[in-house]
Image (cartoon, rainbow, N blue to C red):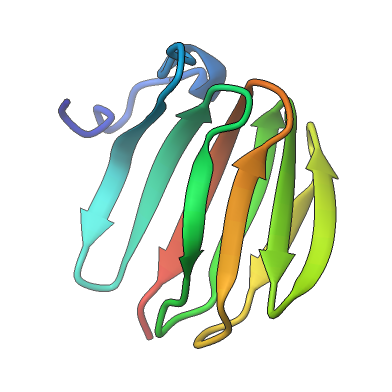
Length: 107
């Protein structure tokens, strides 16, 4: 799927649909300096524990996500955000269908 068109208004919630039993994603911006990616998770779906060399900003656009950072659990709801620190293991799981925006700045 192509990146979002520049100088055009977009509704993030309309750019991606939750699919049964799946995690789907759409890259909005992909540059050497960073990425912006939209995710949609069906209930019970998620991203297994991993770490990244850069801080990552996560904002819940719709639904509820359980996020674990360095072994500490957090529950994020629509409109809430958290920053996942660089090099700290983290995992995400939807406790109900959810949409999430991930921003990673590589610097």
